[in-house]
Length: 454
Image 1 (spheres, rainbow, N blue to C red):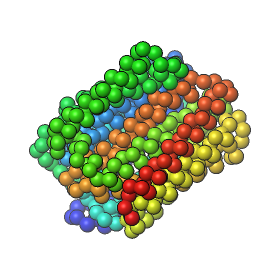
Image 2 (cartoon, helix red, strand yellow):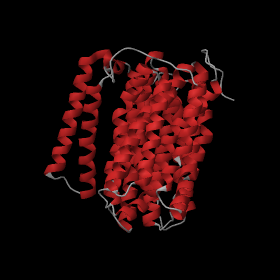
Image 3 (tube, rainbow, N blue to C red):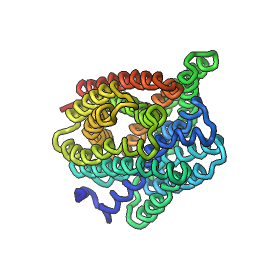
């Protein structure tokens, strides 16, 4: 049973249920889309340079606007913004399902990303303002477990739908979940955090443009296997815009959507670096593994979906326990050991061969990765929520989620170098990516050990 809240809310169990359902929308969408990429590419005649954008058109606004989404919840009310984000996500899902070509699909995916950027930080912000202490750790563990279960159900169900009905039906999966979320949130979730400070629209625009330029350039660079004048200019423009974003945030002080004063805390800096490294490693491999199995190993989408099932099951089972352990012992050791174990799992995927036995080639590495992530997901979220006061829980959760998605965004942009390969070259490129992911994950664990307090 969920822990009792330490503040007065009417329906603690329903509050957790609403936040779990809301965040599950984003988890389901991400896991299902990865399995459907080859089918989408074949149906809409998308090339290797376009396919990463089916993922990144969603991740880009999600990464850039999560900060603003969290701040909007602090400003307008977290329940109100949660409902608005879910509704926008549902409408965009219909657009994805009915898209006649890649242009409408990518536009609808971008609108989905905006909806997710609103709903995700506010789902965590509601938990952060409703629970505290050990109760918060257990609540966040339950939330993380639900997301993992949703991710577990998504790939096999989505793969089956792609095989039997078509890839468009995977986006209709979001509609009943969205409807249930809105009904529960309206009936049972208390409103929280309505402030009066103005929102940082200038920072949001600069973050979006900067990340957009950088991701476009990295995607073109990786899929084209070379740096041209256009891609070099895109990298330079992206970096310049992001530096300008930091300067604007510095000028706005506490009114910024990313208050730079937060970086005066060594644990907060450590959590930020850890998140970028760990989720960068995970994001690239989660996109590439089903693509490798389907294209390189001739798996059907259903088979590829079931191949990913153990990953989410292990995280779903372990996250709630990890949340409890963190509430009692603190986050340092879980966030040190978990990422290092994850890195060992990535190292095992250097042996990955889509034409060999799944049980000996793919499953061992994936199971170890899942075990490590199960020990890190809930502790990381709990540590971030505990690092700020209640007024800024939406902003803090939004920032951490933004860093995680930015890591995945950059990794997916670079994944074009693997997706553009074929045959044995595809397997070899995947194995190189696994080595890079292993190094990043282990480094994230070392960062946790050096920066977090016992």
